[in-house]
Amino acid sequence: MSFITLDKNEILEYQKNRDPYLFIDHATKIYPGKSSEGYKDLKPDEWFFKVHWPNDPNMPGFLQLEALTQMSSLSILTMPNNKGEIMYLVSVNKVTFKKKIVPNSRLNIITKVIKYSNGFGTFEAKGFVNEEIACSGEFNLVLPKELSKFTKNLKK
Image (tube, rainbow, N blue to C red; front, top):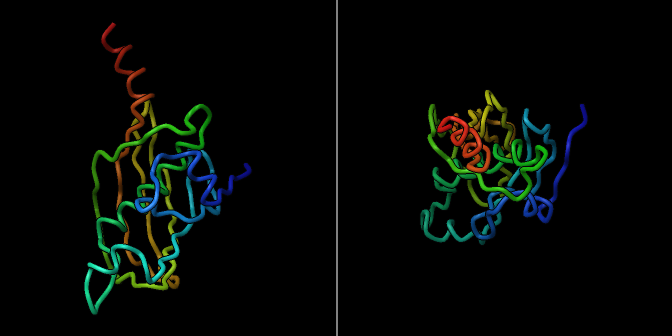
């Protein structure tokens, strides 16, 4: 099975997040419906470093989760007929933060689809800095376009 690689401009074709709320710079390996990998380079002038925290800048936990979620969604958004659709975060489980993510770091992200059916997916994601785990979690994401097809069939 071959994989897909996306640069930042190509990522913008597949998902709706835009700067300053896009937390993926490059998707290095996407197996549609299976997994995705990529990274975010954290520049010193990122907007959140200025406020979180003065004299101790680091990437807020919720933004780490957002980066993991955005990368996870690419494994579904690259499937046929999903390009440019929106996925919503439904729940987050088993979250851990093990290492500060500071300016001039690269957050490498590895995600896996645990289960996906009828527009609802469960994902596992891990973020690494210098090959050390920095954060991880499990996510439930929904693709409303697909979910609505399934729920319409249930109502009939």
